[in-house]
Amino acid sequence: MTDHPEVHPELPRDKELVLRVIPMPADTNSNGDIFGGWVMAQVDLAGSVLPGRLTQGRMATVAVNEFIFKQPVRVGDLLSFYAEITRVGRTSMTVQVEVYAEGIRTQGRYLKVTEARLTYVAIDEQGRPRPVHPAQPA
Ligand SMILES: CC(C)(COP(=O)(O)OP(=O)(O)OC[C@H]1O[C@@H](n2cnc3c(N)ncnc32)[C@H](O)[C@@H]1OP(=O)(O)O)[C@@H](O)C(=O)NCCC(=O)NCCS
Image (cartoon, rainbow, N blue to C red; front, side, top):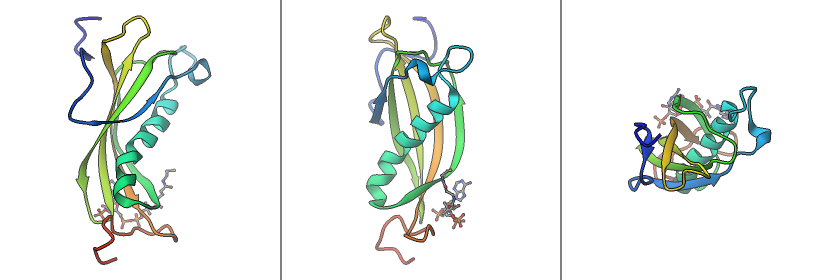
């Protein structure tokens, strides 16, 4: 495992830690690994944190532009979700999310398990797109 290309000796410094969570047995699939849909839900939540700071109001996920399950996630792994806003449009924001797993027996080594790119849209009370920056015309 030490030579694995996705094992990193430290966590990213160029992205922000937005969520940490430990998956439990209830989150597994029939292989005994963590269910991909559970990981996707956590990534969607993690990805929304930085856009939420910009929009300071309602928003919705409009697209999961890319989602790569690089490695299986195990019960009891400490998962760290790192995010970075890579694009701010008029009403939308694109976020890159990386997920690292630290096993209970492999502490201090971080396996990149998932990478994703998602787009969020700021919405008004009627659910219509609104400018990310309120100063912009609607
Ligand atoms: C999000 C929603 C309000 C957008 O409405 P819309 O009429 O499609 O809006 P627009 O076509 O004007 O696009 C709005 C922004 O999203 C972007 N966008 C739309 N589809 C996109 C896609 N597939 N990928 C990336 N960006 C996309 C547009 O480029 C635009 O960005 P900009 O203003 O920064 O240029 C609407 O699609 C919606 O309500 N979707 C359901 C959201 C939801 O329920 N999410 C939870 C998942 S179950």
